[in-house]
Image (cartoon, rainbow, N blue to C red; front, side):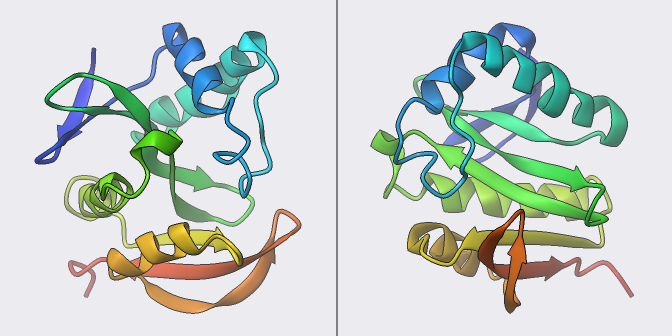
Length: 171
């Protein structure tokens, strides 16, 4: 396991190709993918997502979506992390957790830690977070992380609320 960092309750590690089953299981629940619009149909598709989307970010940008585990038990609960979106020329904060872990503060803890990691370790100047208009849980996470609401827009064909965090180290 390649540990990236940890918080009080969570461990963040690099995904590996062997994690296709974790990605598949995470995306089985239609409520988990309700606002992401990208359900995974089978284990082969999960492996393709790892190979073509998640893993290349690590090599190209030294960040990406990280597997998140509960520190005390080692349980995989989802992912959180930073992704460079070339088409928007920005760093995107994203997170996805299994439903049984919703409402426990894990998403906020993970998102906040990823923002801090991006600024303190990766020297990023700006991180953007988006949530589809009806996704009140995700909107609340972005607000709890003290991201600033900058407006509504359409991204990937869906109406979203857009937030940003600016590094305190940028002068």
